[in-house]
Image (cartoon, rainbow, N blue to C red; front, top):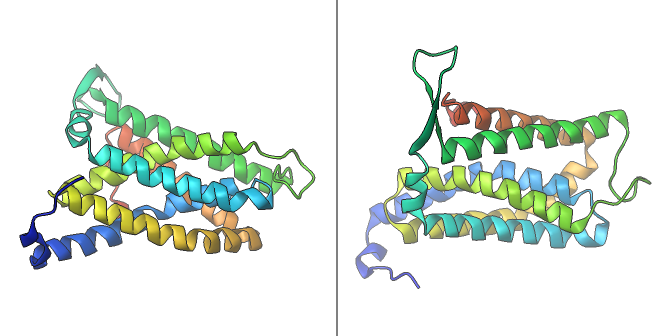
Length: 226
């Protein structure tokens, strides 16, 4: 258990940091919720809520574990290879972080594009459309894979803003509880409005593109995206 110093409770800077980081974590978690909602929507009705809860639970668990391994997160920035590239005079530095972001971005682009194709071409595989039912375990594994990528992005943001681990964990936990409350509503809204589902998937393609660019050391301010 992580002890919280008593002077933190009366320190206004700690509370401001907590509120600011919580708000940012909620914004950063939107893509996570949308992805979980879309994947859960491919399951039978009686499994969707369970999948959403497990997905967000895994997201919280992954973030907390990564926060407790901050020293390891920092080491992920250390390059282990250098590759010459045509768009820069400097070689591209390959690190654990860049590799995770690059591969995660490609996976997100491929998954979101596939979902758009199924929706537009009328090859819905979700239960209730006469297609093959999605595997519950398969959906959870996909959620876990993207949770890891989203969590890494979220934790790096938290580490850059706040120094206190308990504040980071509190902010991430509050943000995930907020998302858990609204996940069902978001899922229902997306399922009822196919246009917004396409927009949500397009947003995920954009997020995937940003992750790929970050993996290639091309920084894009997230403020413009959100």
